[in-house]
Length: 240
Image (cartoon, rainbow, N blue to C red; front, side, top):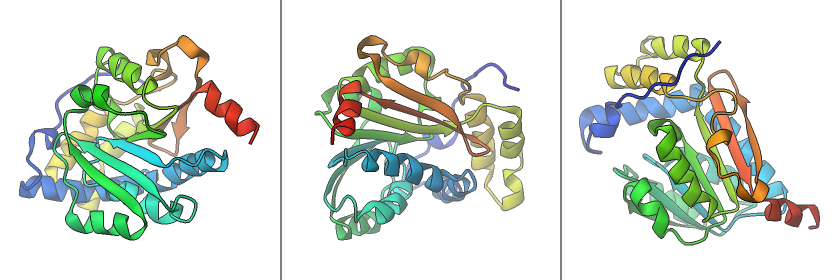
């Protein structure tokens, strides 16, 4: 069972990175990502991309937050991807110096970009892979259509993991207080689910030209994934 998608401002988006409430909310998000199984979901997504002989050497994460989710993934991928150029993009990034040092220890050259993604994406150079986690649901369909138009021109592979808009996920969002999440997180979680995705809603907004290979599906109990792969990339993998 699903319901109509609705967007409302989230409290964390209006806070500065050094706001104590924002710091606590980001800690909450690390737990929420764990509960939603996003580390496992992303490992499966990225391992499939890497196993297709298309090991990316340049990766961009949109809406990175504190960068810790991608850091956890980098630890598991470092052997397959020992040298990566990584850009972490966020309007209000909260990436700590220690996090950047841990990326560097893995051989990943990391740059933090402070910018509004919608303004910045047109300036991005061609990159191997663009990923985003719990980010797309902040935008309406018109904004997403424009964002995807730019992304499709900048990369051959794009992957996203978002809240799934369902009654079960909405119930779960109302229960986050039981694990000690802050009022900011409890409010934003409900808003996020209501703005989440269902069915093939993201696929319908992706550019139709060039016949991209699209995969959109439920992932785990609370999440929704979308992967777009350019046909030329798929053909390259098939012949490698």
